[in-house]
Length: 337
Image 1 (cartoon, helix red, strand yellow):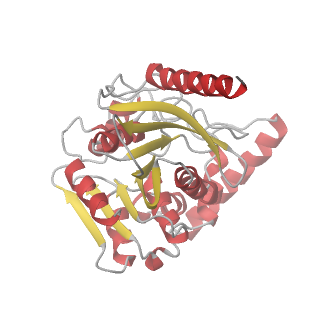
Image 2: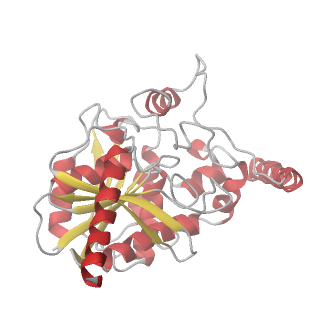
């Protein structure tokens, strides 16, 4: 009788989590080809990560699995969820997670980003997937979008359990934080930025709270660069807005930039031995991040794919029809075997 009660309790839990994940507001249409379940797991820093798990219907046996994170300042109901759902439609078990301190994941104070902790988020996802009975632990890959593309490469450099990595419209957050866009900042400008950020630390300590940097600018200035207009079109409109998204609302806390300025990502990316596919739009303002990062990679299992005519945000939700899902699937089929 006790065993039967435990089974019933477990089934109710699974059903409730599934219903929760299905009813939770997403910025993309649901698929009738997959099941979706809300799951939780902890990272090495003790933070509980929230994720949506997508699984092909009628799937049997141990599946290849993929963990998806990003964009930087987004939540799992946005771009990462779309990628995870699409990969599940193609036969993979996939999870989209909220990074530490954001979305439905835990962590205080809220809205903190860190190159170390956010790289760890990917490895924690691999932990979670590796011990599932329906996952083959030797066939796990990751997808990182925007700023989480850099985190994904960083994770691939340290975590040998990751057999294949896809980066999409990648940002190197440490580079852009320390050098500005297009490396426009010099040492003096960086020093002034440090002074400003550390002054904010004092203000935050006095106030007992952390000031937010603000999400995507709103209202949108008439003279805003095209990539800022593209961000606005995604994060601030019905197309991609989500109530928990940092970019759609108040943004990261101001002092998050300090850790990225002082702790460069991709230091050991040249030592990645597993397969890497880097995807970027031809017209993306951020294209140079992928191109420069790709130059450091070694081996014939590395590839850079430039999508003709595509912008940075075009690869968020496939509104432009340019996300190369067939290529991504082929890549994972080749290296997760």
